[in-house]
Length: 399
Ligand SMILES: *Cc1c(COP(=O)(O)O)cnc(C)c1O
Image 1 (cartoon, rainbow, N blue to C red):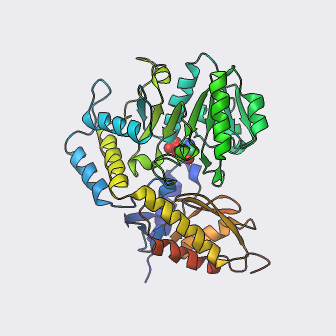
Image 2: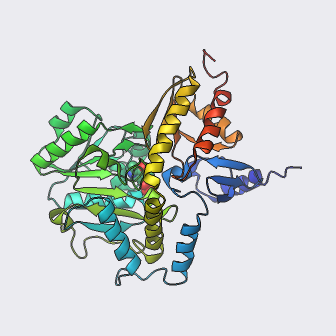
Image 3: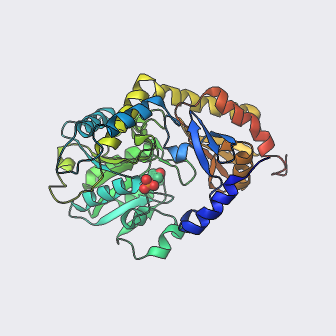
């Protein structure tokens, strides 16, 4: 007899938590590898990884070991003091991001905090105007929210910080028209995850680099979702062959332990924020930093960048082989992917997928997003692809 503990827990959730997330779809109790289980014992293949966060899946022994070892050594010290994990993680981030001599790191606790640090960095140019792309998602705090494009997120909280302009993504002329010597910073995601996995063209990113360099505007690349191996390289900007002035990251960096970072490129940008001008209590504490180091080590030793690329390509091929009339293609790079549908039925597909034991999500009405752990196997991806025809049944005129 099923007991349906989940339903009772969800009632208690609704009675005790602010309803900003709506009613959750399940209550999860534990995970292992790419699987999680709910309170009723049902198993799900986690193809979303906590929205591009659990890069090593669940219960990875190296993450567990790093966490428990550091928890027993030193969890937190305040920024009056330095710790070795913090220094080592900063050095590793500078190395894997290909940052030039004189670059530096600021540690935060989340993506939106990394963006806030970047906004303050931009303000240190003496200019106030910021530019971001239509469709952009940069976070929910008041500064980051001003850069986020979606009206429904912004409007209830206006006025936000002033002087932010949104330009259509991949529109060279619109970018040329807006970037000038009055603009402090241009913020771009290499792939807009929340907008439905929409990529900035490499040529557009290179133009952005040219224009911002010419006008003394900072080019800040938001790698919160795309970074830390997600797209098959350490950072997605590296595939466009540009060197930005700063990048932000968070989601995958701690594999589930909250940590974010701003990396500033080169001595000029890296000395703009001076003692006392920014800070955070928890940012870069040794617990989060030790896990971040373990994550970067594991991505490297287990060749997960190449694996992410191979698995992403495998997914594209498998979905194409289905030849399903409701699927028009697979977008994205590495393991940040959108299965694009020809009808606005993604929400139904996501609900059916959950019932069938697969976790995916629908960032827009015709897109099913996959951002699985970087350790996902071809067989696991195939199990979802094989389920797709059933998940899409009777949802379109042709099926
Ligand atoms: C998730 C996300 C953020 C915000 O990160 P939080 O940790 O939720 O504050 C910012 N930028 C991008 C591109 C994101 O995907």
